[in-house]
Length: 408
Image (cartoon, rainbow, N blue to C red; front, side):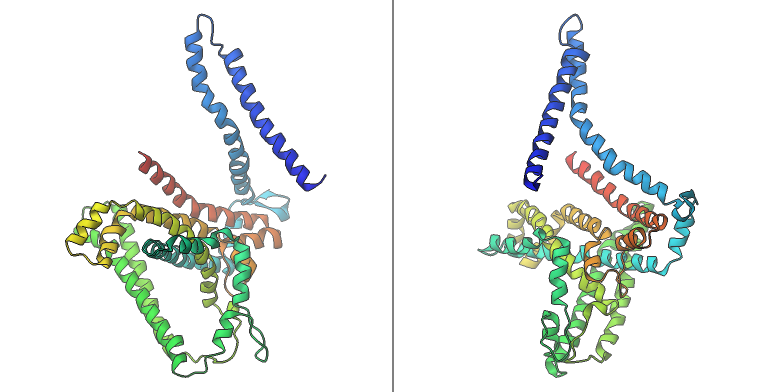
């Protein structure tokens, strides 16, 4: 059958089945199960109205159970069995094997690095784009351009950036944009400015922002009054900020003393550690548009009276932005941050399409894929899937709880 005809038949059958289900189930409910006539007509009508919403929810509940609930249970079962032993129960042996593999810990480190950089950068760039595009006449056009990468699949974006990072032999023309720029540097003043002074400045700015964020998070703990869990979270955040600041400042010496191979094209995706950031750029490029749209709506929802009052009191644009606007949209920023965090925890396509986890770029989802479909080890592969689920579930539950809280 022709694919177009098959699609049309599928739509007709699907829509017809839905209409038939709702019509016949309501007919059975009103005419057979709880008929709306006779001595108990009133009670039957009330009972039918109580049951009716579940008739509409039943197909969705069944589908969720089939496509979400069952896979979780089956994955958990597979994680405690061994394929080489005909599916015999082995307890936590697969988890022990997984924890003993260096590649798993490499994936965990990289996922943590992605978690630190991508949500922060995407949210910051999205907030910046939302603020700036609302201040210019052609802001809607600019928003469309920033949002456009959201229409591109992760694999499509990976192919685009793989071409940007492409390296050709030194005697051939460079088609990769990054190498085409790189080979123009020859070690002069501009090379030092762009490749050493500018990166050091960026690292210093990053360290300053982390220090400020750590101070803002930890400052309420100094006054006391917080619960023990909140206090622990604040102390942990401050410790993480100090760790990032220490490593940032330590990297400055490495940047300043690095001997760069000027004029030689580099295979950027094979450079350990830095290649992770090149992969992150792809996801930041895509998610910035999402963050911009949500945060732009939040900024427009800020009452004008508060901004006008700040202007009358003599606040400058930066003070208005950071002390008036940002505090009022913190809940929206948090939702955007956590939503992007969920995407980051499950990131797979970008790594698979660009490096396939080589050169120290492994992440948990790609590690799981390697174990399941390359090593044919369903035990360790399922165990890594359970780890991903455990990492995602608290953030997902918090998002749902926060959404319900906002609705109330």
